[in-house]
Length: 327
Ligand SMILES: Nc1ncnc2c1ncn2[C@@H]1O[C@H](COP(=O)(O)OP(=O)(O)OP(=O)(O)O)[C@@H](O)[C@H]1O
Ligand SMILES: [Mg+2]
Image 1 (tube, rainbow, N blue to C red):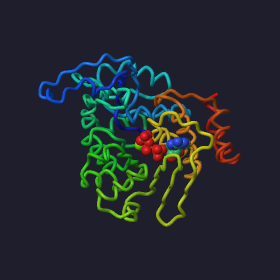
Image 2 (image 1 turned 30 degrees about the vertical axis):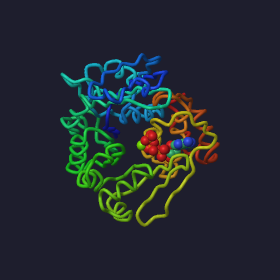
Image 3 (image 1 turned 45 degrees about the horizontal axis):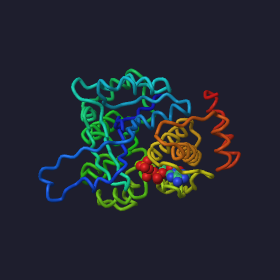
Image 4 (image 1 turned 135 degrees about the vertical axis):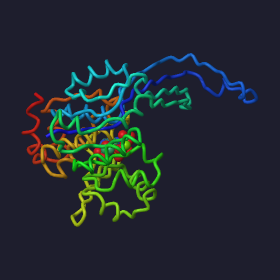
């Protein structure tokens, strides 16, 4: 069975200015604003929620299918992902728009000038899942992550219509979407992913109580940052587990996506919800310890050792058989 991961595809261009922006701004002249900063550093990072999750799944030996829209400039990013085991054959390439890009310059006081160009991402609404399914086989799940809102809605509706089990993971789009959109993205999902802050936003925007949200999804998975994760299932005991042990947190970007990748790998291996959440927490630990969202690596032995260190030998034993492909 296939794993379809739909969501934004983007790169982040991050620049650092050694001085203070405020020193260059003349308050009385803001109507003629035109400033340029000589920056010291440019970092280009691969991102977008869908490639981040696909990378994590591929690191664990699975072969996820990336579903999203990018520009002609996607070639380098594509070869990186393909080299690491991600199926990119269904990515839609826009004829006239560049891949989505976040451009941010920070100064020495952490003040920021940032812009987000959605670009090709807005063509996610033109992607149909059925031809992808015809190519790769029936989906175990379709994850619908943050993306062009019309694209998210279209994927969710197509899943409902064709009976593909789907995972709602609206994350960043929750802040922008209205209640009606969010209700449509969540209702009937097999799983709902969010962090704790987002879970409250889901309740306030949809107008559904926590119980009503749970009524509408099979399983709700809420990540709690350094405090771990909570898994709720209607009529069953809550699973709560701590984050991985001995994590030297360096940079959190992408940590939520990595958790999802690990969790989905666990589902696909059929090791149960608790084990899946444990795999998610260990994969997230690798991301939080590195700068960038797709810069981590491990052998099967190393991954299993971390799993054992945090969650005990039985956890490692249950996962070991599935990590064969790695070493
Ligand atoms: N400081 C940390 N130490 C160890 N594990 C962490 C830490 N922060 C996050 N994690 C792991 O990552 C998972 C997801 O984290 P979090 O709840 O912060 O996601 P998020 O808010 O969606 O993050 P983002 O959107 O920035 O990627 C947690 O469940 C936990 O397992
Ligand atoms: Mg998140």
